[in-house]
Image 1 (cartoon, rainbow, N blue to C red):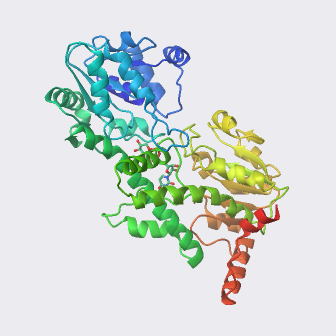
Image 2: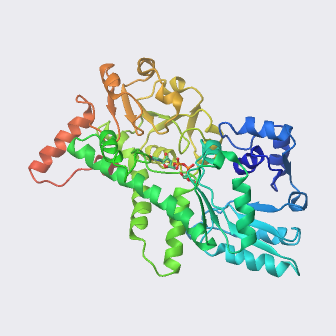
Image 3: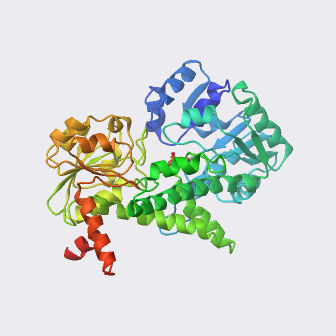
Length: 458
Ligand code: UDX
């Protein structure tokens, strides 16, 4: 949706094809199938200008096209870890006999190394004669800011194996003055395919690194936000993607790290850092409930917890691999009742969560709850009126898994607040637990984990 619309915005004639008639019908009436800020205006504008069209008919979309992008999903195969390429192969088989000679078929979907070679064979064997090219052009869009990421990318990566594809794609990206200062990296198809996975694995590792440091900060009394700035201002490190939180989620990082590991395994290579990143992130998401349990001395049975934010990050309605899901399930297993707020994610959240009361207003969500837990960094949550929030809660307990609330202001209002990788409130029971731990350490006793106590008691 975003790529097609933005290509139209740059003056190309674009036809977006999907098999889901409901989506296509909705788009023709101006209804977006996804929540993505800024996209609806752009679609409306380009549709009205006649540069952007929608169809369920593949022939209508590809006949006469000089470039055809395949942008179908490549989800993780359940239990396997590798990417399910059946939609990519299906698209290639179906378009093979419909494309004109000299068409460049470009894979935008995230696909393992060598997929372009397979497509070359699939399309080649379906076409009796005629020339075509298969290229790779990975996308690096982030949900929520995908339009600006497309229109002003850090770089464009093009993977080609022949001159036709090279010329056509350079033309496509060079035709726009907007990209005049953007580096375009032209490389082989297999390198382009791997660049996408390497970028996502690196970013996932960066997040996991700061999350592990956040754990250490909590123990030693340092502040991870300041630590992140302190290291990030070193230009070799960079300040972005150093926000500690409940663990990364979404449609890419969890899936792409697993798929990369699977590729490495297939080729007999060990990617120890990526392996550790994926495992540490999974464990972190499972552990987040511990922060809530700790605030209640290890027992939340019968308590009501207000979860503020459900989607895997702000500005999207996407619930894929959202940290809110394992958190809520763990809290429910420990006897907690869940009220949850999200500005746009409730419909998708209701499909993956049971026994949760959903609210479109954060204060209503907090009503009579024993604690509020911030899980997604929505603007509405960043700007929440802490005094009003406190009035709605039954107990003034606040757990900020995104470090977006003003800890000092919350403490002044009488909240017991805990955040990620930062010291807890001086008067909170969390602090008490910390002191107890220190005492236990002093006596060289075994470390007590309130979460495991609660589980054992259950
Ligand atoms: C990601 C890549 O950034 C993008 O280039 C690729 O095309 C698709 O995957 P996206 O999944 O939309 O984009 O979101 P992103 O902003 O990268 O965040 C992914 C996850 O990491 C979220 O759960 C987010 O909350 C988390 N995150 C991100 C952190 O916990 N800390 C950070 O500092 C940054």
